[in-house]
Image (cartoon, rainbow, N blue to C red; front, side, top):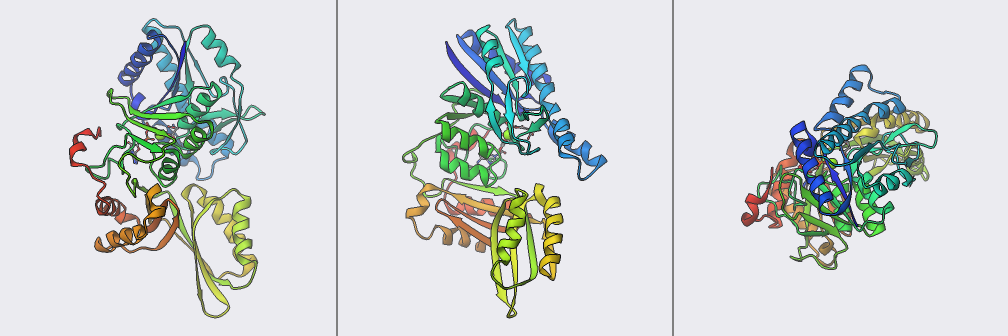
Amino acid sequence: MGLTIQKYGGTSVANTERINEVAKRIVERKRAGEQVVAVVSAMGDTTDKLIGLSKEITESPPEREYDMLISTGEQISVALLAMAINELGEDVVSLTGSQVGIITDDLHTKAKILEIDASRLEKELAADKIVVVAGFQGVTINNDITTLGRGGSDTTAVALAAKLEADLCEIYTDVNGIYTADPRVVENPTKLSEISYDEMLEMASLGAQVLQPRSVEFAKQYGIKLAVRSSFNRKSGTYVKEVEKLEEEMVVSGVACSDEEVKISLIGVPDRPGIAYHIFNALAESCINVDMIIQNVHRGEINDITFTIDKEDLSQAKVILAKVREELSIEDIVYDQEVAKVSIVGAGMVTNPGVAADMFAALAEADINIQMISTSEIKVSCLIDKQEAEKAVRAIHSQFNLGSEARKSDANV
Ligand code: ADP
Ligand code: ASP
Ligand code: MG
């Protein structure tokens, strides 16, 4: 008997009508002779609402309690989906992250999966049941509930696919697949029929919300093909897999944008060996990832250092940097949240000089100022004013001729 691992995102289970639709899809697959494990997100914007509730109480909740709260959304959706499947006459059981044996480290709100004890899951499958799993959550060895970071249900699904040795994981969402840019921002993006793990990993890490980066990493590591599809229709979607050459041999395969970063400028930093180490080591010790960095040399013995971090790390970074400021006698620290990072991604960039220049040209023509730049072999990123983000994505998308008039009607948004 074949095994199907499916994941349904928040919009796909946003209300009971949608839950009934998803139940039908799952049951159809079961009746076609497959075992089915369905990983489910919280209904609609439940997770955001739960976060809002916590903010009404405090800006800095204890992280254990925060995870206790935001993991509850998934428990609602799995129970309702299991009821809907039961109504259709199939044997089903819903399981939380803890019940399904997802053991994580204790880094609350962005925990990493350490191992999966799949014995319960295997027992239920052996009893011929459909298994519905709460995404996004796990448990530490001390039995504390953890969450896997926003979008973490994707990672739950791929991790279970790896554990159960499935070679395909179906990710059902609210768009028809992976596009050359967010179809909610660009009018005529092209849907890709396939994309390589590496490109998808860059796209996801640079803000293309459609897959959590960690899920793509897992998929690559375990050789699991991902099929990203709409749960609202039967279109074929996009495969994320090992790709030798992209079908259309595009130099740039997509444009991504994120406003999840904050720009931090340290003004008047002493210029001597060991200073950068002091600052960035202090952040690294608290697992705060630093992305773009620039250093302006001026005024003799004094520099300015500017860098970006994830917005979610801001309150922790403020505490650390206040201490660093005292230790190093830094003159001032400026925090700017009104920024966005717009990026192009493409494996073809390595062999095509001038790609970055074309991106800068698009921004110049759109009269958008670039604050910071970073590049790698397969991406170029520019930090710009947040207000200009959508305009920038559209300008760059059009600069690289990524649009597809023919496929305009394909955008299911
Ligand atoms: P789900 O709730 O199913 O996990 P998400 O909201 O996390 O869905 O991700 C799907 C969204 O990702 C889409 O609605 C779309 O707006 C956004 N998105 C951003 N970039 C892209 C892209 N390049 N291709 C497809 N979708 C994208
Ligand atoms: N519900 C969680 C979130 O909104 C996890 C997910 O949807 O994948 O981030
Ligand atoms: Mg998601």
